[in-house]
Length: 411
Image 1 (tube, rainbow, N blue to C red):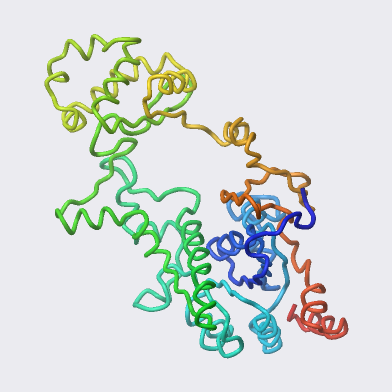
Image 2: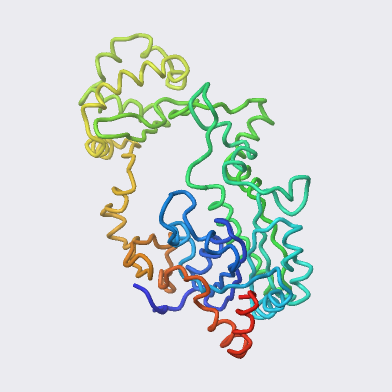
């Protein structure tokens, strides 16, 4: 499923320039590309080869799977913005663009001609989204950071992990992916605003503030209102029981009982049609309110119920929960997700022909439009793959001038 678009898409009329070697900028631009925007990914000729490798797994120097995923549906060019000629080429790109997404420190952005003051003079209608760890102002604005750093700075890590042990970040660079989603959302708002004002604007995305707003905001409010500090509670929540991840015969299940009747229904599953004897005959449990069970006896109850859970597979437990209206689900691994009949019935995974790896399965966009469907129609660009198309056909440069730019290391 690689080639040209088959259907019109919501953002077909938009041209986006993406500059910045990080997940936030790449995924934010990808979300726009998945809905039809033409995204031109600008890569530095001096660092692009290293930027493309996995950096997590040793060995093979091919483009990494992370790069391949977050850069599909894009055009790619090489451009050295540290040169005067490179910045002139950038200015020509900006004149024809609607959006520029970048992820440099404010001072670095100014050095490269990516600051909003410079860009808005070239194209007053341009929307610029700057996605950085701590935003464009404040004492931390010049700091670089990884997801693990932002997770810690945003009061998320202190809440994650087992009690009494080291705090943990959320896995898989969630800080960057969520910040990218917020940037894409903000840019669509900026497009609407431009319809009324006729001008672009600068959108300042602080990853730390995204994290605090969307993941630890409730903890902030709990502290302000009640002086209550969120603590690590491991695989369970601090409040109700059961509410967390529990062992079973072939892995884990996720279980949530928000109301007393749900807890009673789950007990009937454990007792195979009735309340289990170990619960019914123990006054400590039967005389304790549902909302106090976790505080007083949570650890003991977990051991008792896991004796039964370890005799059942996660799919057997899920089916019992579905029949009895109990909120539980199997904890799946990646292979199980790829083979999931529901996702495959909805054609969530699609095959894409990649020049380096052959045919691969890719997740589609989670957004479904009935009249303008999204699609993965192009793999991540090879380095400089679309230099001629962009510089000659779009900007009108001669092939001789493009060759000259290549010879002097600009592209």
